[in-house]
Each structure stands twice: as C-alpha cells, then as structure tokens.
Length: 176
Figure 1 (cartoon, rainbow, N blue to C red):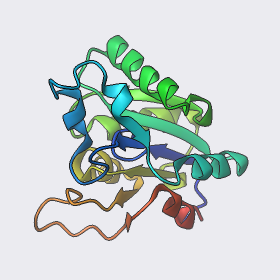
Figure 2: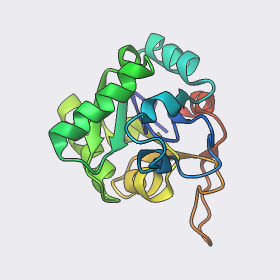
Figure 3: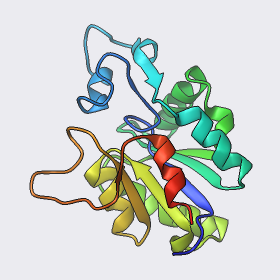
Figure 4: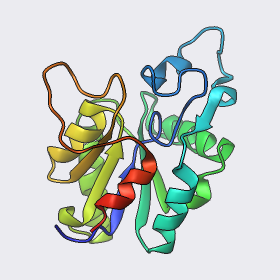
C-alpha cells in the first residue's frame, strides 16, 4: 500500500452530525425537519475526535478535502456547504471543499477529477465516510481506498464491509 497523500472526508455523519441523534440515524433528516426549518446549523455538532485528527493530518502534510453530497444547484450547494463549515469552524482545517452531485457515483467522479488536477495517484488517496453507497462504494468503484464509519445504517443488509472504523481518529491507522 502506498503512503496516503490525500484524504477525502464526507461532511454529514462523518465530520459533523445532528447533536440529538448523532450516528443513530442518517443525518440528512435534519434538513427536512419542519420544526427545525432553516435553523439546521444550530443542531449540528462536530463528531468526536474530528478537530485533533484533522490538525494532526495537516501537520503531517496530508491534503484534506471535504466532499459532501448536496441536492441543490451547484452554486447554492457550495454556499450551503461553506455555511456549515464556517458555522462549525472547520473551514481552515481543509485544503478545499466540494459539493458533490446527488447520485451514488457523484463523489467518486469528483474524486477522480480532483486527483487528476492535484497530480496524485488513486493509490495515494483515501475516502472516509458514513454512507455505503455515496462514500464507500463510490470511491471503491473508481479505484480509491475507502473507510466506512460504523453506524446502525452503515451497510445495506447482506453487504459485508471489511474496512470500517468507529471514529474519525481511526483514519490515522490507515495512512501508510
């Protein structure tokens, strides 16, 4: 295995989640809850170990990219994502962030474009997320290693995922 030069992180459910449900259910519920409305930012918190892990990765020279799937038009999706990052004060911890299109292959396609632009090999990249289809499988299908955060909703019934982690900090064990 080649040393990882770039790590892609999912946003919802990986870097942040709703403080009331954490990882007990898919995090996207927060955006359509009528009681919460447009105040979803007030209900999001960073996942445990995120900040120290990202800081350690940055100090080691790893390129950090946040990729989050959004159903909005591209410009609106970028602003929505930027607002969440700003609110949670993680903008400075990432080298770049991108809103992926809302279909299962969206992140994988975006990862390939970013790697090409950066001149980094697929074998030097790692994707970390909480969604089997949108994070793990999307990366694996384009030849990029992936780690899936264990949750009650992690993998579809009958699917066995060999590379799972419990916390964001566990990514540090997979960099070499």
